[in-house]
Amino acid sequence: MVIQGEFLGGGHEVGRLGILLKCPGARLLFDYGMTATDPPQYPAPCPPVDFMFLTHSHLDHCGMIPWLTARYDIDVVATPVSREVGVLLMEDSVKIGAAEGYPEPYTSQDIKTTRRRFSDIAFGDTRDAGRLQVVTHSAGHIPGATMYELVDGRTTLITGDLHTLETRLVQGARPVKCDNLIMESTYSGRNHPPRMKTEYALLKKIDEVADRGGTVIIPSFAVGRTQELMLLLKDSKYEFWLDGMGKKVNKIYSGFPEFVKSGKRLRQAVRRTMEVRNVHARQRALKGDVILTTSGMLDGGPVVSYIDAIRDDPKSAILLTGYQVEGSNGRKLLETGTMDFRGVTEKVECEVLKYDFSAHAGHNELLAFAKGCDPEKIVLMHGDERELLAGDLRAEGYEVLLPRNGEKFEL
Ligand SMILES: [Zn+2]
Image (cartoon, protein in one colour):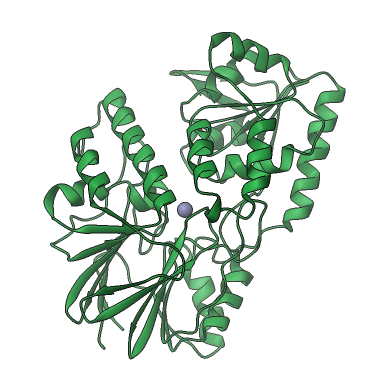
């Protein structure tokens, strides 16, 4: 089998992924996302394809599917939990686009079409696509995140975003023996501190802030990160509140317990969480111990109002739990101690700290995963510093390809 591949986006960068593979008898597309920068960045227009496979429901992987299904009459293969969360994110991105005045790549009507095109899979399922069979595996990144194994004599594994360690929310991914491996490399050159240490440090900081009479605000991505933190906080003695899109994601995840590590624990965490449902509750939340809310990088969402309410209070703290991309409000806060409140830059007197709760495999974990798959060829994608990991993989004897967006490669 010869596969011809090309990245429509997300090859030499983190974000807007689109992997086009011309396989015997079928053209397949894996993911089609957008990078939610200001303004958003889109992948190259996708030519006609026969099937679309979604690895998971983060906007940089699913955000452009409505553009695709508006043009081509194709199935979108995904886990049902990815479908539900994906549609939620697509609808949100149309709302944000309209509010910010960006030209819209698709409409709400197009999202309705997308919803009808979804075709459900579970882990371990096999699908026919042309002369290939496509087998699904868990990618361990967030609930429902899927790796796809293409089988036709030779095998090719596409990881999507990948996490190999067990977290509170999901089990880690296991390697799959293959001939070709197309693997993400977000954390090429970087390792994460042990998760237990990070969890301990975060809880200790909350203790400290509560003791001195402050409020803790934890800005957190709605999809995956929020639930991971709820599972951590549920056993603490603190009153914690949740505001923003995480509430809707909780509902979806609760409906698909087969895609989380423990449906029971997630249910307990949801019951233990106080949800902000109106303006009065926002005031009550500010009197509680911890507020978990979106957006994770402080670019809009309820988090801005919460920080605005406590920004003069040095007893309070803002504990960031995700990567703060260049140009984001969160990065600005970390670097300058000031942030943007609806167009006005203000000083923030609260303590500001960052904790690494990444849902991506670190450098050494990616290396170990690739060795476990033991392929001949490895294509690294979804990374802006791929050379560091490529060097370590070549030293192990693997052939490594680093195609840039738009560059053709062969497997
Ligand atoms: Zn992701």
